[in-house]
Length: 303
Image (cartoon, rainbow, N blue to C red):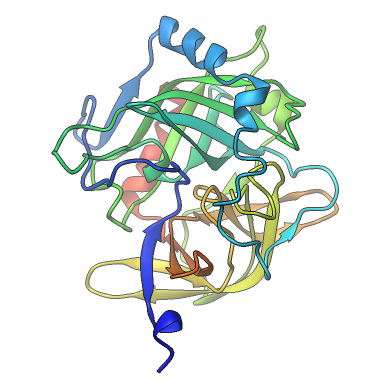
């Protein structure tokens, strides 16, 4: 047996590069069915000041990034509606990035991503890992922010999500401040989202900003693969052999995607992946949407 190829490990693809090991959620404030973190006005201003164009590109040229994707390809043409790069800092000071997508809401301020992108869990000493400096850049492309940089005024996950080591209900919503009175949905567009039952195999377009040697988070990448549904006593997930690296977490899994209009319907987001000893992602999974996640989304316009 080839031991190198046999050694595999399951990882959360948050791309919080160098962050301490995460274990379970550390709620900021909890309602009966969701955990909400509210960001002060001063902290929102600090987040915008922190994420300079230079800091957003800090991973470019890093030789320690995972190898380039072989299945995933750089997206050609304009970034699809609502899709963008999510930046954050996991205290005590480790910057990272994920992917998020603007979705329809009453406030026109909501983006959808993976829970582990904003839930830091606990470090190995059981201290909470606080996520700060959360901003979203729709349409991000090689350092360009065509629609502006939106600070998060709040973010939330379902109380059924137990933290970064869990693959169940690994979803979160973000409420974003408007820029000069302009809501993110109006300037960047949205992707639809659905919670209904689907066939066990779905032709899927997956999008994300992998922090790999091919992309360094600077470009949107995609996989067009069939996603298959699997359910056991612990998890219900959608699975593919897409190989997007860390940073693609939270990226949308779109069905009925039209490359002409750049629109589809989100039915999951990238949650976890299997990585071999060489740092190559061999498959991705996304949590199947549940009733608690549907309720989380429906209340997101109130954040």
